[in-house]
Image (cartoon, rainbow, N blue to C red):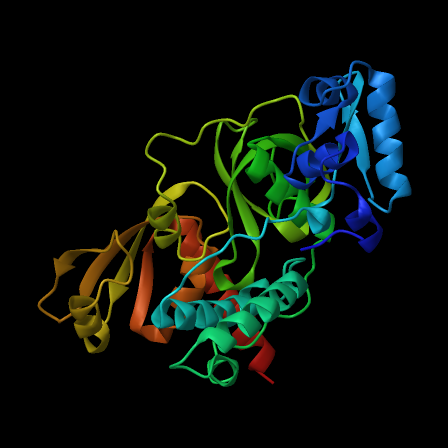
Length: 339
């Protein structure tokens, strides 16, 4: 991606050009740090170079880092240097398919437009170089689901979390929990993974208050601030993102619980043929053909939806509060249709 056209006139060999390169590479620098990176000997000189960049059309941003200010470029101005690359026909086709798969996933994020623009430029080059595939035409012949509705979170939230991941920094957030919680509304978290299971964007992070991993839904994050002087907490040594999401039934967080269900005879074969969850265990096979099946899950919202999908073919036996919640929901539905 490019920065404003006026900045292209800057001589890359000049100290001003060298500073621009540092900022475009993603560095956030104080005036003192600029004097260490460049052949200049004063903060006054660093300030003058920053002013010259701004006058040339470069939107240099600034923020506090302790008692000093640091200067940086927004994500939209950072640049990836042009590098020659050679691809096989299959690799080029794989990139086309991957870009189409990513369109729906990123539609609600600030990366949607850059994906279209950046891939459009890349596709023009790939299409001219391909002797086997008509890539521009093939691009229109892949479909990966309906695009989600417009995002319900602010671009600032998404961009700040990406910057925190990139710079290995924690963030301070104001968070509105979906359920009653004793956690303070403002807390510090160290982002680990960005994900959108079920179309809902969230960040898996180490919560410094809970001293444990938690999911934070982006739409519930209010104020957010990058902690520029701190290093993010390390993930637990046994943290496996693939396993983490496979074991959650689309959960939004919560403690691990054992769920037991009674499966009626007409549905029992499905549970013998397929594991619906990595922790699924058939604990009992009854003479009636019924099964008692257990799972260990973190968070019950996704589990509740999955149980509802089975209708009267499964019954929750534990935990009691899950059975009670489902019974109350069923009663409310029955009451609504009773007339």
